[in-house]
Length: 440
Image 1 (cartoon, rainbow, N blue to C red):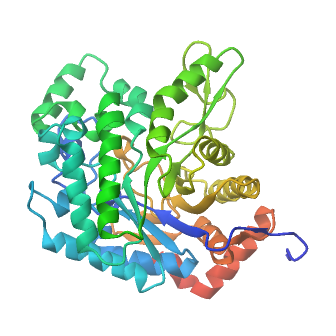
Image 2: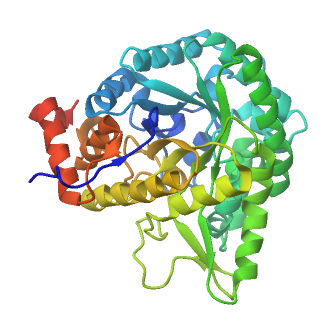
């Protein structure tokens, strides 16, 4: 099949194409954190422990070789505070050296590293000192970020905090895990293991801690990083759904926006960029609830399969802030990789239209490079472009990795048909060789 007569959708020159992960979800053995502690406490609030995860601590360079081979130009990953500062004021040279090797593995392959300083997990000593709610938290976080910026070479793009507002969005899910006759005992066990109230763990943080100390921590960290790396681009990432309403429920939607989104956009307007992380839309109803439209296709995560949501959110964020946007996460969870290919194509087609309309979007990172540990729901949801057999840690490319890699390579969607993308993916697979589909 030829697509020569089908116009391609070209993205701006310099557009950043990549995939994303987070340390705790892929490295393994991240035992000095609040999440690990909660995972292994029985009965646990998590469905399963992270354990070895997908062992990227030992396989980082191999994963970068695959990422580069399929055509991606950038990798967003997090450095782990609990490894770098395992005790207050004591920094690990070994951990910093490890992350320097990770950055080098990117740069040697022409991959732009995008570093996230905090992606959900906190060192136990931070949790036991009050977490995000502690008056000292902004200064402690800024000190850690400055140490990383001074110690690591090759950093030019930094996300300070991942999804600063996400504890508010997932509050209903978390509260459902804390309900029932055994909830009091589970909370008591969790807090005993943490050595602190549950609210000191990031995912359980109250709104005031996120809006007050969280935004202050971002600002101080941003300034600390720029004091060392004045040319670095620094922003925060936010979890934002496409908030809609059924007729008569507009006030419910507006309150959700006011509670979950507006304070955070107001706090980061004017930064180098805002990291937008969008997976779905939420439709507010007159009964006060919000969720998928009845009858609409949903993903295994339980939310609406809605590739159009990303562009809608980017239009809204640009309208509200006039601050450049990097899509730091967007993806599809499930085992139907054909649908994942379609979702990527449709999401990027809508995003291209928004860019053509003047929305300043400068990059796109698919979540996730690898099937990995998805927090409270464990390993069941599959977001990855690369599958991992966790019994052997063997990697296998999915067709979606080839489809997305070709888009990144071309800086364009070559034609609008799924078949055209399949052709492009076949060409990429041919360049890699059949054996590249299974990577040990």
